[in-house]
Image 1 (cartoon, helix red, strand yellow):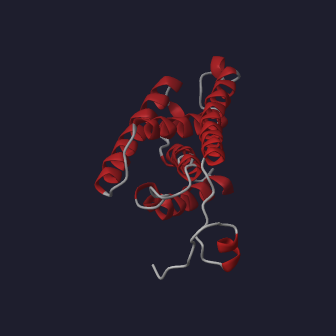
Image 2: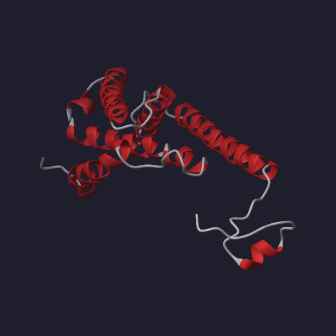
Length: 182
């Protein structure tokens, strides 16, 4: 493309490298069942970032997305994101991770964020849509805050039990306390 800007070229070549490099994290990586409950909640925001970058890349490499009406472009991107998102969830299920529709929602949240930041929406929606998107993203952050608050409340209710690995810990206990080899 002769009128291609430096940013466009960079997006066109760097985005696929980042997307392919981080794609395994969508399926294989991430917190496990023994992780702190806050880790998976924050990790799930990766869906928003990854699909946002995918949207930026698709807008750069699909020139027909620039010439069509806004609703056609949005429908095409929704179909692409839904397809890729469902494939990711199916592969996650095969890899031992739990699939979920909330992840598919986060995928669309990332797509919509990139769409509206790039000014891809209809003229009537260009002011209201980013505000709506920020509200939806804030809701995801509220969910993470609720997970953190719940975990903090649970930790405050559980008794603190020492591993008794250090002689100083044994001194805090009364009765017949001894270190074992197990």
